[in-house]
Image (cartoon, rainbow, N blue to C red; front, side, top):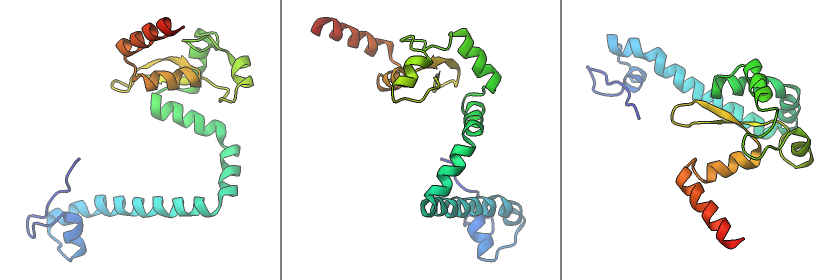
Length: 159
């Protein structure tokens, strides 16, 4: 967690010192950064309140922009363009890398019809595409091969 810079004149955080009337060079320089952050927080809270008061309009907006949101998520979270995602799907024959389920099976289940991007949480490297069940399963096993091996041993013993 980073700490806010301190005003050399007052010893207070520069954002608070500026609010209290300090106009030293340090407070002037950092004022814009922290007031923008505070404005962003107020804006976020205002938007959250509006979404809670207008759930139907939010639902309509999400339906209308569903593909755009997915593309934004692919790029923002995984660094994948929509074309790279499609290439990865084609490479895996549009099937889960673990269980092999495809869109026909996914559509019959109650899960989303697209495959999830599996990635290494430490490096951000994309590993492959998984169905929702396999993705959640790996998450519960914390991507630990030794824990998965223990689960296999357990399953072989009880079945």
